[in-house]
Amino acid sequence: MKVILVEQHEVPIISIRVIVKAGSILDPPGKEGLANLTAQLLRRGTSTRTGEKIADEVDFVGGTLEIAAGHDIADLQAEFLKKDIGAGLEIVSDILRHPAFPIREVSKIVEQEIDAVLQEKDEPEAAIEDFFDAYLFGKHPYARPAQGDERSIATIRRADVVRFYQKHYMPSAVTLVVAGDFTSPEMEKLILEKFDSWKSAPSAAPVKLSSPQRVSDRKLLLIDKPDATQTFFLIGNVGVERTNPDRIGLLLVNTVFGGRFTSMLNDALRVSSGLTYGASADFDMMKVAGPFSIAADAQNGHTTQAIDLALEVLKKLHAEGLTAKHLESAKHYLKGQFPPQIETSAQLAQTFAELDFFGLDESEVDNYFARLDAITLEDTRRIIDRYYPLDDLVFVLIGKAAEIRSKVQKYAVNIDQRPISKPGFN
Image (cartoon, rainbow, N blue to C red; front, side):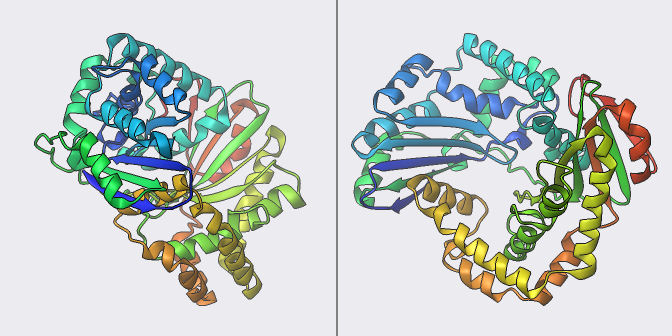
């Protein structure tokens, strides 16, 4: 187990972040959601504590404890007062090393997660990312929803959870980050006391995750929700990985294009036209290339007007690029946003855990301002041309097909359509 200690003195709360290389990319086909269920079940009982006892002990000391799994990792986050850190680490150690996976709890969480998926589908804004990822990434592991779907979750049994845990939860797959008011020697001693007896089983062969391929040309998926009065849409393609050398420049360009309230997209679609409550763009940078997407919504009758305007703004970005004023404004904005992101012990624990997972180092923080300052208008021109798709675009819409299908046919030669009530996301 790798341990990273971050001393932040005179802060009463000590934060713990545990990253386990046990994300949904490891879910067996047809068992999507298994990594997430395994992570959540860690706190539902151990060989010596029931789930209720774990919750009571955490509450008694005023702590917090959350666990979930995304595509790349399982992620445990906990906070305890300095005086209670020994008890907190004991609980964290116990749930990581001795989970019991009570069958009653497995059945309960399976039902809860199925209900959560069905509820998500009743809220298009929540569901559209899963539909978009499934349509964009095709057969790549990132296409599969991290939380699973109503079909795959229903097939998961306790034996699946136990098998997944035994295969993937081992010290060699874990990074533990602790941040707060302590001295490293005393914290090292405490961690050794709680975790030293945790021995690794033979490691499973590492998963070789290939980079997804960008989609060529245009394609459109229309998800029919007959009672919808609004259309939610995402437009994009495959983006970049977290370690992309242009990541800081991309962040800067995207701040101008769709990353803040005064962005080009939000100004055009919300402020100037009133077509939507908000429009944005995002590069989700993951272990390998994640999605790039433009997101907005509009009343059914204004669907194509909103999409057309979003495409016009994208076209304008390519045609005109950024101005010197854009560049200066975005640099000031990002510099102002950065310090509050690394102030608390929880933020520091998160930062160091993520840097370690992606193979980055402290220079990502230490040299951030210098890297921003070094970005030129020529750099932004190159970044726009290289990373922002203009003609090769994937469209995913959730709306009332009877009202909008004939209007959105202009965006792609062929339209795929499915009812939102159909099980799954692909």
